[in-house]
Image (cartoon, rainbow, N blue to C red; front, side, top):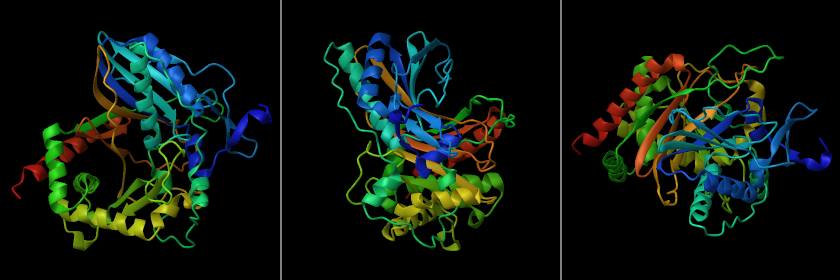
Length: 419
């Protein structure tokens, strides 16, 4: 590796995903005629527009990783025939080769098209903006229009972006310790292999709660009436579900989740200006919140607002080195979630219908002992339908299905109860 090809070393907020080799998939389920030539043209254009996608990660002599510029062709598209529900069938991932990929799994006129991006170089908000451009380019290619790709510079780390805004680390952040290492790193599903053997990527299974458009609209209306966010309501439902599953009182659960910082700092940060522009916060239900969905939702919303108003959330990325050194917290009632919010409407296509949006996370088995053995609920809304996904090892499918059934029941009970 020549020094000229090195873009920069990874910052701690990026580094933690390089050690686990964490890739995140943003998948669109389509039906109709998928034009593979147009898709290839669109992917080439999106890699030109976002050169970070063609980069790779190299191990540094200091023990961390560096971001290295692309030196050859754009990452390849994998296309296989199979079950579109198995989003990454036939695909191979290697962060030392590329941090971006596109995976297609076809079955007749149905297919899943999954944009896969390494978590070190982009979070969900960043990646969803790229996904929108991919499908915009695809539409242009199928219609014979010019595919015009505006070139975006390499994104900065959140540490650099916070420093430019004068945000500094709190000297004694009382509640910061648990959060940063608990974001979207799925638990290992196999025993770690010896260091000299690459164990590959264990593929998780996904269990999902998906509300109808009508039920989602009623949940939004409930939030408006009670002056709480949908995030607060879903978080409260997750807490109630976990309390029942674990047979623990709510006051013994610690709810941890990531927070998009882009609009919570001044000046705001653009969607693709940074890699992982995420803060972290938590909520420990107190007795005053009670055991109702609305009471817990208010507790979640109030705690988040207080953490943002104090500046606590905005500086949590700066705590990552200290948290990494301490290792994962030993909290029996730990509950984790990440909310991607509303997935942007994707451009309509000729001869192709966009039916659904899914997520997937893959990571190498943990060798460090720092990754907590807990799953993360992925919350998103696409086409006006709320979705909550849990990615987990196949052997825990029955337990996760029970979780999802309880979650669905809790949400439907809330929106169907007379107000």
